[in-house]
Length: 225
Image 1 (cartoon, helix red, strand yellow):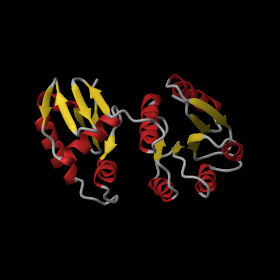
Image 2 (cartoon, rainbow, N blue to C red; image 1 turned 135 degrees about the vertical axis):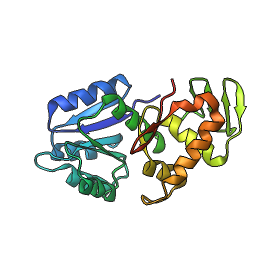
Image 3 (spheres, one colour; image 1 turned 90 degrees about the vertical axis):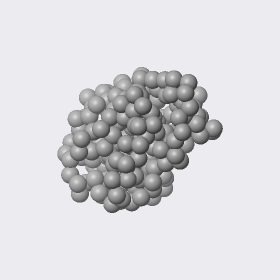
Image 4 (cartoon, rainbow, N blue to C red; image 1 turned 180 degrees about the horizontal axis):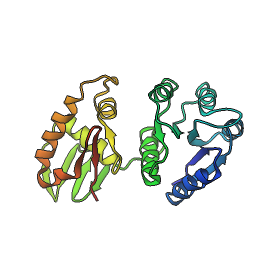
């Protein structure tokens, strides 16, 4: 499979190296930029960037300005990195069409998992039609799930929910994010819908239901092997 290019933009060389090392190990080609101006030059020079990872606070042009310039011409996935957690910043990011908003410090492994999930959603990574984890096998084409070879009868939404969990294995997913991707509700959707479906899904999965962990105060995380 062709290696995908990721543009990592951060004025801290140590941060760029950390991200580059983990992404390179996962098979991505990483291109670095130390400021916003350099990032735009690289982005418009190389037409095959698959994803852009932008630090918010940078010299010359900050991450918001870079994102605006990119969004005027492209729908390429964008991840914003920031040293502070500010709701206003996060809302601005989503208004600009940012795909993910990650606060430093972060786990590099989780960052890679989010990159992979975004690239799958954007159709740039060929998604396997079969997902497997810890004896759970989900076949998208047949719309079937088996656990240790035993068929499990899931509703349409339960199947979509399990698919989303398995595609984002190891990533903590907020209830709002799950609503957006599985139910297509807006940010203010009723989060109790999630809890009800997760409870039913866990019940149908029996002992394997334990792989769907509750992240208290946030949402859920799939932790299957």
